[in-house]
Length: 104
Image 1 (cartoon, rainbow, N blue to C red):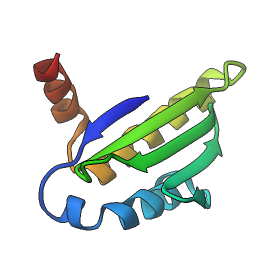
Image 2 (image 1 turned 180 degrees about the vertical axis):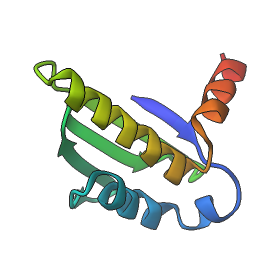
Image 3 (image 1 turned 120 degrees about the horizontal axis):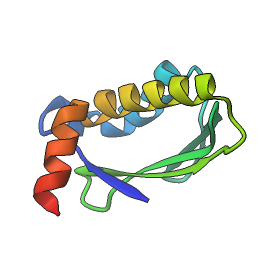
């Protein structure tokens, strides 16, 4: 499970809506929501589950990969996943990498 911090501002205020709407927009799939968990299956991901962290300022993402997916499908899925994280967290990929390095 990965934890991603959310940028202060509008991203935090609309976090619950952004989680679900982001899945629809980036993956084109209607997520199954049960309680606080929103879940989809798409491309090279057998399972992608997203929840809001206990502090309300982060998200927890759990993924399960489909190892039999083709390279094209893997690249497309990764692109969509990165775009989803950009949208929900408010941070770009470079900013997320930099934040992850400072935490370690």
